[in-house]
Structure formats: C-alpha cells, structure tokens
Length: 416
Image (tube, rainbow, N blue to C red):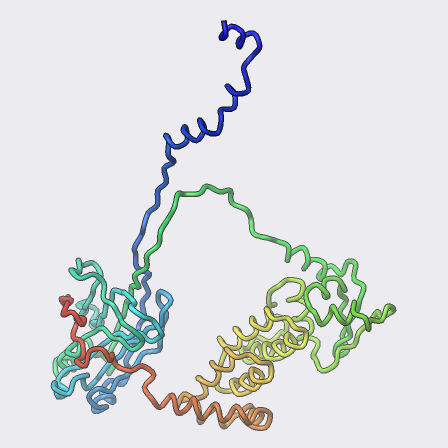
C-alpha cells in the first residue's frame, strides 16, 4: 500500500535528489581516473667554428686556447676551446686538444655532445666524437658549473693533423653539437578552437594613416603631424599630462616640438599607433645601415623623453644588433644618458675587445663619449682588464683534463 501511495502522489524529492550521505557513498565507489606523461628529451643546437691561420697558432703554449664565440643552446651559453699545443703539459705539445665548455652560470647541467673535425677533401671522412645515437651506460654527461668541460686532450696527433685533409688553406673546420637534457610532464590533451591574433593595432594605425577624427597637430622641424589626443594619452604618460593634466590648455590646437627631427617624430607616432617600429631605412629614404643606426639612436632618446618603455627596448635591441666601430661610442653615451643598462653592457664589451678598442678610440663618437660621459671611461678600463683575463676557467673539480670521458670514468668511443 505504501508503494501505491507514492506512485499516485508522484515521485518524492528524496527519490530525485538523494541525501548527501548516499551521494558521497556513490562517488567514493567510482573514483575518477587521471593520467600524465613524463617526457625527457634534448634541446639541440649546433655551432660551426672556423680556425683560420692554424700555423700561426702553434707555439701559443700548452694549456692556452683559441675560443669560439659563445652560442646558446637550451638556455645556456657554450663555447668551443681549441688548444693548438695541447691542454696537458705531459703530452709536450704532441697532440691538439678540443673541448666544449659551459660558458654561463648553471649547476648540474645534463647534456649530450658531439665534436666533428671536418674533412675538407670532399670525401666526407670526418673525425667524429659523439654521444648521440649511442646507449650511454651512465646516462648523459653532467657539467657541474660554469667552466666545466667535455672533450679530448688528445684529440688529434699534431704531426698527423698537419699532413691530413682536415687542414686546408691553413684552416680547420669544427662542428659542435650540444643537446641539453630537459624533462617535462604533460597532462591530458586539452582541445581548443584557434583564434586569430589581435588586429587592434591595424585598426588604431588606420586612424593615423587616414587622418580621420584628429584633434591635435604637432609642428616638428617645419612639418606638421595631425594626431588624436586620446590615443596619445593612452600610450604615453607624458602626453597624458600635457593634454589632459591640470596644466592643459583647453584651446590648444597645435604643439611645437623642439629638439627633434621630423622623421624621428614620425617614427614615434608610427609606434604609438601601430605598436611596432617602422622601416627606418624606408622612412629616411636612405638604404644604409649607418642611417638606420642613427635613426634608432635618435628614436631611443625620443622614447625616453615620452616614457615609451617598449619603444625604448626595441631601439636598444636594434642598436645592439647593429653595433659597429663607427657608431658604438655614441650608442654607449646614449645608453648611459638614458639608463639603458643592457645596451650599455653590450657596448662596453664590444669596445673592450682588443681588435676594436684602438679603432673606436679614433672615432668622433669616442670624443663625444669622453666629454659627455667621462665616468664611463672608468668602467671601460675595467672591461678591458676583464678581457685580458680568461673568461672561462678550467674545470676545478677534476685537476686532470678530461679525455672523452667524465669524472666517473665514462668514455665515448670515437667514430671516424
């Protein structure tokens, strides 16, 4: 009878919504399942090192090396060291030595290496020492800290090298490959719908190009540039204060910009509206690297003047990539005056190099640097002193040079 009454009256709320105790009992009996995958792989990169004038490097001295430029792989800096008279005094300059070194800060960096001396006869009989494609019993090689090395103190007998096809026109060619070991964990794959990138800059840039709705005009070096107060104020705190601050002039329709050339202000406006640098060579109508560098220097000063930090960084990046003998001193002075610390460090390093210092000192830019930023010369002297020292010290945790193996005695068999 009780069941019949429930049917006539319809389902009870207890039947539709079970109590919390029964729900808890149900969920505990069917646990959810999750999965993840740990993936260990290598981030690989290669560097080609040409050693020109090999015969002139002989007699450099045991333990003294010729270093490649540093190169980046897997978030670390690396360098190749070639010892023309060998790394170990016990070999009495009988062998040349070749090593790969960790050139940046790092602890317990695990990596695979490959050193290849290229056969220049066209026969492709290269001399290869490699970790890649092999089963390493002890796993990848571990570099303990900056200056740690892997390589061969007896890489090649010097007398054999000098009569081989590896030496051509007094040059040696070395290929170095580094594979930094990285691990990551992947969870369940998440499905998504692709979304096109933002084109807001194109719409705002159209406002500048079309001239629609402009409400302010700038006069720069005899040229006029119409613009929009709101856009300028949104992008630059300096313009915001000038156009909408408490000292603004309600009737102001035209602003004259002093101490700036028209192409520089035009590039400044282009960035404000488009959020990217214009083609500086196209803007000036001169297709030379020197003009591009000069524009970037002036634009950096303008960016600092109007507190456009991203534009300032873009100019720093461009000046860094275009650093040269005839412009570096002026760039260094600008970096000091406008607090561009990264650019300043790069310029100091470039000037301090022995092959650059004398030439830079003879430029007009160096005279300007001496007059405008004399304190920078003291820092430059410190950089020159550093260049004369070894930038990378030998591995300190093992006094004997490694010869194709690590501190645990693991070796890599050469492949010819």
